[in-house]
Image: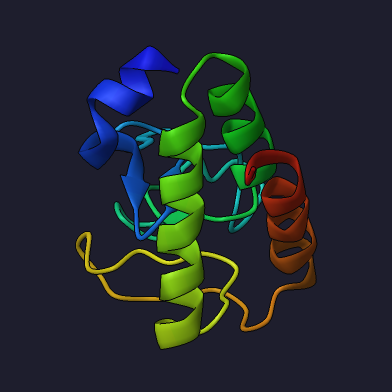
Amino acid sequence: MDEMVNNPTLYFRAGQVRHLPYPTTWNRCFGVAQEGDLSCPGPGTYQNGAYWATPLHYIATAMKATGHASFAESIIADAIHDFKTGGIYEDVDYGYPANSKGVLNYTVRVANFHLSVTRTVT
């Protein structure tokens, strides 16, 4: 948690979490297009560099448990602002290098985010 708090631009954007520190991306993936195809989605897109609010429920809970409650509250506030201004999408990449979004009003994202707020915000 200290690593994430000390280097937030590597892990967070608009309150949402990247699965690998920026600018790291996967260069080998499980077969995605057809059997034996180990190519990955382009860097900065979907599961190869996009940002997600879905895991905030455990990231924020862990932040609070390790003494970073104010940081957890700030990323939640950033995510709420992003939802209000840009919509609640499954994932967002914000131009790293593309600008794409996943499914609008993704139920898991909303449910998990609600959980993160109820567990974190004091």
